[in-house]
Length: 168
Image (cartoon, rainbow, N blue to C red; front, side, top):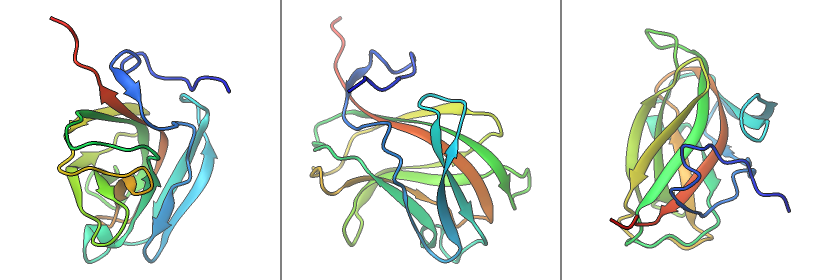
């Protein structure tokens, strides 16, 4: 199995916990669609997420991706992903998402919530999260809440990296 392409900005930051080639986003909510797309970024395959209309709560429309690795509350985790806005019913026409790490079972306890305004050009978004609880491999997810606007965007590879402390 060939190693996945990893952007140089995150290649040496720690241990990759997930498979960035995995793109099986599970869409939920009325008018939400996830479909594979070909991109010009790492891995060449992405997912186009479309929300037909804003929802009452941002989390009423969204998508989730299973991480497939155990994550400890003691870990410092780097979440990085490539994405770009295609269109949105926002003032500037760019998509806006809420991204979080969560347990993929009700009540969907989560942490590290970030609201991210996507740009029209592909960009690598990165942020650190310290989980508030242990997550088992079968429950750990990255979730995006999308109900803030009618919108469409592409998301490429997602990288979940357990950071390794660098010697001083």
